[in-house]
Amino acid sequence: MSLNKQLWLAILVLMLLAFISSFTISTMSARNYYQEQLQQKNIDNANSLALTLSQVEKDDVTVELLVSAQFDTGHYRRIELIAPSGEVRQQKVSASAAQQHTVPAWFEKMAALSVPAGVAQVQDGWHQYGTLYVESQTQVAYAALWQTTLRLTAWLMLVAVLCGVLGSWLLKRITRPLEDVVKQAEAIGGRRFITSNEPRTLEFGRLVRAMNLLSGRVRDMLENESRRLEALRYQHQHDAVTGLANRETINSQLDALLSEDDGHHGMILVRIADLAGINRMLGHGQTNALLAELAGILQRWPEQERALFAGMNAGRLNGSDFLLLLTDTDALPALSAALDQRLREWSQGVADVQPVLPQGACYFTAGESRGDVMSRIDSMLAVAEQGGATGTAVMETVSSRHHWSEGEWRELLNNVTTAHAVVSARFPVLTLADNDCLHEEAMMRVHWQGSTWRAGDITPWARRLGRLAELDLAMVEHVIDGLKHNEQKPVAVNVSVDTLRDVAGRRRLVSLLSNAGGFAPLLWLEFAERHVIAELELFRAFCTEVKATGCHLGIERAGRDFAKIAHLEELGLDYLKVDGSLLAGLEENEGNQGFLRGFCSLGHSIGLCMIADGVQDAQQRDLLRALGFDAAGGPGIRPL
Image (cartoon, rainbow, N blue to C red; front, top):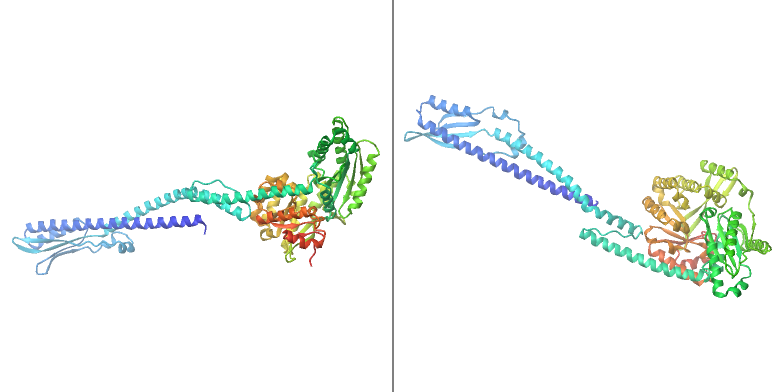
């Protein structure tokens, strides 16, 4: 029973006790009052009649007339004159008094009036003529007492209603801080360590203060550990001069993209020609500054160009070569041309020297080998260098469908989203402790007109045309339908942040989760780390909104930028999937091992399930478990 209900029950019991007490005391007081008044009337009337009878002749007719006259002038139940010998001289008794008033019998029994008769002596000279008994009719008193009780009950009920209204207002005002306390307690129970304003109520204030202290300590611990891990990660994975990913890291990122189930990506290789000559001309310090400035240009893309790819990783392969990995894109010529224009403008503004920046660009798809891809991009860079100036060479090795017009892509997206053509391929994520299935990863597939499309084939144009939310919703709806009909295994679905940006799409997603009922806890929704960082407040609000449905929320490709997620402990996440590029060559990379061990410890401290994603080698299972991972997925993870 809730505290609110308990307080209300206590108030109702107190009000009932007060009502019964007031009713009983008031009714008994009124009864005693009427009883005293009737007794006094009996005594007064008996004395008055006895005095009159004592002064008149004592013939039977006169006595009877006087007794009858007195009996008829008031409400009497009995007037009786008894001789000293015990003989009844006169007697008048009311026979119809009980039918004069309508008072419930139970009330007469409960508030019974015990009124003694008035007694007086009648004298005949110096002799006693008889004893007079006068007893008034009590039915009138019962009627008056009944009416008084009814009015008292009505007033008490009115007071009770007013007290109830006032009590409701006071109770709501008093317990208002309790709602904040409950919300904070529920948030902490859901691994969201939030803080609340301290209420003025002393007891609530002490409780909230203690909970805020707990949240603050957890937050400080996470922030300190995040800074330490970020420093460790940056030291081992970034180039000291430019701040870009170093050679090992960018190669690991490339390997991770090549090992994915699907994907159509692009890469651009930029070379700063004659770096040794520039170093002799400018000196070591200015050359390093020039390289850092170039790295900044490579990392910054205008918003209109960012819409042409899902993500970008930049790294320094060696002293003069810089590699850009553009995920989920088929607009490589436009991106390469835009970058070439910016590099030309920048090189012309460099004092004392104008760097020559040739670049090669090519597509690559999941499943290719790194050697083949790097050989292809090197050949494109060689073609660009033959011009002897800043320029670009692009190899477009794409299927014919990527040459479709915008209208053809729009028609395809309309068809697949309305015809329920979105399906999924499943890949298991297994626990490292007992090799059980934690959940299955659902990878998008589109069946249309006899062809099967992978997510990487269709999402670039879906993003460009603003239709990515529709694909995400179709995928979620497909998975929920499968759970309802014939599947009981938990399923993980990747959702784009574009779906959260789209107001209608977000509402539809929340509605799907709410209507899923008991199947919602089987659904694991995951969002890319870099997209969460870009829309952190929007993601935070979404987590709060859908947490009540019971679905699991997580971040995929996590690890590289996790320190940028402010107040991670407040999101209420259930799991993190660590980027597969951090696992490449893990056995020989002690720096990454230390980072991942700390990262898993950090995640476990706020109750997160830590999952290694994109594992290529089954031999890594024991190492991943030793580092603290709870589960793993990827080509190298299969049921034993």
